[in-house]
Length: 497
Image 1 (cartoon, rainbow, N blue to C red):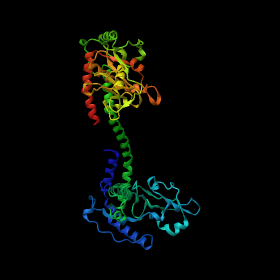
Image 2 (cartoon, helix red, strand yellow):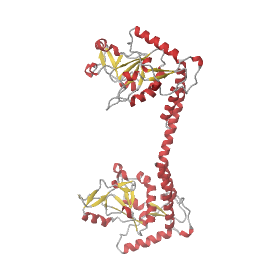
Image 3 (cartoon, rainbow, N blue to C red):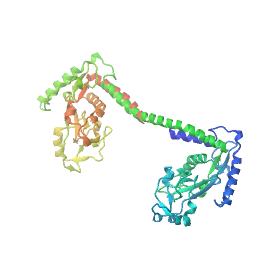
Image 4 (spheres, rainbow, N blue to C red):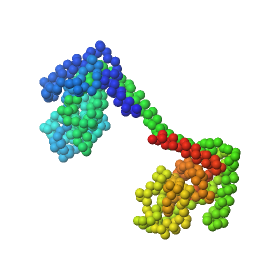
């Protein structure tokens, strides 16, 4: 239940007579209805409001819920008089004049919505007011209601304000003196505004229902003193609702972040050697490192890869966190062949080979709806530098998509050229190590983004990627780490759903 639901529940209890207890000494609503009728008759006799046809008797089908015995159901029209603003042609912008000593203000919808008489700068001449608009004059205590767009917003006119009238987008409500305004507005805001939105007329914008329909709505009326206690109780409870709203929002934010935070925690534990136990029989990362170096030298001698520049020794200051004794810190290019695709823009063709960029990555998958294509010759030329194979990792290096990546597996492999995308290729193809590397890269994306160069068009350079540190476990432990990650991550994905 969110805060609005809680508020609605409180208001529902209030208008059903369940929020405060009934007190016999406060009498019955019948007595209040008699007073309201007397007041209304007096205003009619004084010519302040018009006499209307009697409203139909309320039948049982109209009553939405039970109320206490000392309450009564009345019609909206029984409690006051209601007037919509002047017809469109009777008040147009061409009639507005600058504010002066002999002008009358035209109040607008924003006065009701923003609860202020100070807003607005439309005026009419006093002459036009006296001859045509006098019947739309606002008096202290009148309620103005927004009638189009943001409907049902109310504002009680204060005792001191600039003389003025309502415009076409406002309704004026004059309640009988014995009607407790705060209770009336409570009901109006909760039930009537809700109903008005459901039954509103118009298509482009919603409008308040027709007056006759509005006047016939039924209102649950308690004795006056009980109305006051209901309003006081609501005012007492609303600060708690606001606190609940803040707490609810914080919990919702935590709930939204929790799956992502849990995923990050799992990956962080994994790359620190805390997700699975270390086993002596699995050997050391140093042994794996030496095997990779031997394979790397072999590939260099065979002319399949180029010899890379010697990288600086890893210093203590570079170490990101502690790792198990049988692990080893290495730079990426010591154990992985790190390349990138073309930086040029080849000629596009309608049928050819996909030119993959980081924009074609979406949640670990290829999204090819906007992919450009290149000729076979361009594809072959680009592939000399970066031939994509199963087991490789593609990593977006530039723009807002930095850190998006895809592991190339048999099921998603196709012939492609790449542009502005890093290619992580193993010296000895091994899917287990590729998956471990992918999860490590995922754990480092935030850090890489934070340290990206280039300002608005941020990028992570190939030099940075090649020298980036990698915590290297023994291969068998990598396998167990990957299996544990893939066992746990589906649970965090369920939390998202």
